[in-house]
Image (cartoon, rainbow, N blue to C red; front, side, top):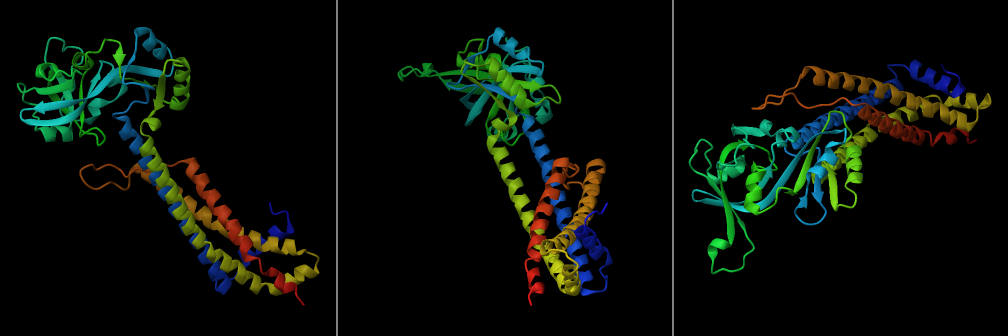
Length: 407
């Protein structure tokens, strides 16, 4: 309900302006400009939110929700008691022990440096490794004590070495240095194991270097005990706050020289890049909206000039200069509000339709809907940005109103 004189007059000015007059045309253009800016900002922010979710899901295919690693050194002891203390947390879904190290690998005559990662039988419950397989099959982690160890390899690494997962008779030789400095006995300089590649996975961060094998094989290669691990990887129950769980687990691990990292902390650089991109996109579209708001400034200035006789009448009737300024500031804000509501409403409908019905698809081999996400935070971001910039534009447009009161 309109309760103040400045608001009432501003509302009358906005609704009664002639559509065919210069002021009316500029006002319509102003509303259109604000609507386009609001529409574009919301759609772009929603697309970026969708892409962010896709990136997080993609990272989660090879990285756990939480990861416990030593603050110093390469390994730590993960006893049954230690693992039970983690499993006792009600937010934890599954726990897996991991042991990894750099190694030298040879397949036939091809050679390269790899990172061999030993995982236990719970690993598939922590990381959806099977979803990344592009050839072969997974690892029989619990049945290889008396058989040549089976392993998965990154797709780029398999291509580099010329690995054929259908070849059951050609092993991958993996070597690590023993630390022995007696070069006269070459055979004691390295320890080795033979493993058979049975599957190939695809993930951009792991394709080029990773070999995933049973942890028992890697322990034998590195000479580690059954309790020694490089990390403990943890999956969480659906809907659980990873940050809160990480803090709770860190309290349990206090004084043990260990740290708990969330997925965001494990991929810190990636998250920094995504956050930077988000901020840059926000300021680019804020600048576009600011430029569009120059039309609002022009519309309000034209209205002030058109209503100069009314301004003197309002002054004669007792309205203060601040009240008269308030009339045109509010008229400018109403113009911004109309444009913002129209643009934001259309954008919300479009984003919702894409999220629900997948109108736009990514062309190519993937044939998946273009990622987009409707969030209340993005709605608030657009509203806050437009109304702050709109208020500044409206205030700037009335700076010269005092000239009408000079003799």
